[in-house]
Image (cartoon, rainbow, N blue to C red; front, side, top):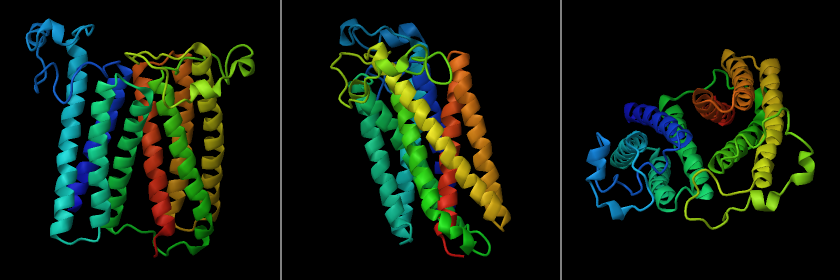
Length: 327
C-alpha cells in the first residue's frame, strides 16, 4: 500500500504539471468532447486522422489543432491512470482494514469529483469557476496522497518538539493563506488576467480608481458560449491581478514569520530544514511571479510558478502534520 501511495503521488504531481501545461498552452479545448477526442479515445496522430473521426458539422466553430489535442489527451491519460491508482488504494485499504480507510475514501471521492470537473471544464467551455475548482481539486488530491504517504511511512520529528507546538495555530493559518493564494492564482489564470498589470509592484496608472471586485469575483461569470481567453473587461481583470498581488504580500509575510519562528525555536534538524525550505520556496516563488510580469508570462516560468506553489503547499502539509503528530 505504501508503494502504491508513492506511485500515486508521482502521478498526481505529473497530472497537475500536465494540467498547468495544457492550460498555459491554451489547449483546454483541444478536444471539444469528453472523455474522448473528436469521437475517439486515441490521440490523433495527424490532422487528417482527426478530421475524419467525425463529420465536420459535429463540432462547429472548433478548428482542429492536433498539437493541442495531444496536450489535452495526454493529460487525460495520466488523470485516468491516477484514478485507477486511487481506486486500487481504496480497495487495498478496505481489504486490509487499514487505518487509512477514511483517507482513502476521501481520495476516491475527490478523484470522482475531479473527473466530473474535468468533464465540465470541456462541456462548459472553460468556465472560470470550474477551471479554478479543477485546479484546487488537483492540489487537494496530491495533498491527501502526501498526507497518506506521511502516515504510512511513520514519519515524525524525533523528540516531538513540544516547544514548537504553540505555533500550530500559526502553521494552520499559513496553510490556509497559501490555499487562498493558490485559489487566487487559479482565478487569475482562468480569467486570463495574468498580464492585466504590466508594471510592478502593483499596477500602472491610478489603478485604485478602477477596481471592480463584484464583477471580478462573481463566480457565475458573464454568460458566454466560450470562456477561452476570458470574457471580463480590463478593469475586472486588473482587480483580480491586484488582489492576487496584495494577497501574495500577506502570504509572504505569514510564511516568513513562520519560517523565522522555526529557525529560532527548533531544536531538531527536521524543523530547521523545513524553515529554510519555506524561505527558499518563498523567495523562488516571488522571483517567478516578478519574472512572469517582466518577461510577459513565458511558458517555462509560468509552469514553474504553478509547481513551486504546489511544493510550498506540500511543505506546509508536512510541517502541520509534524507539529500535530505525537512523538
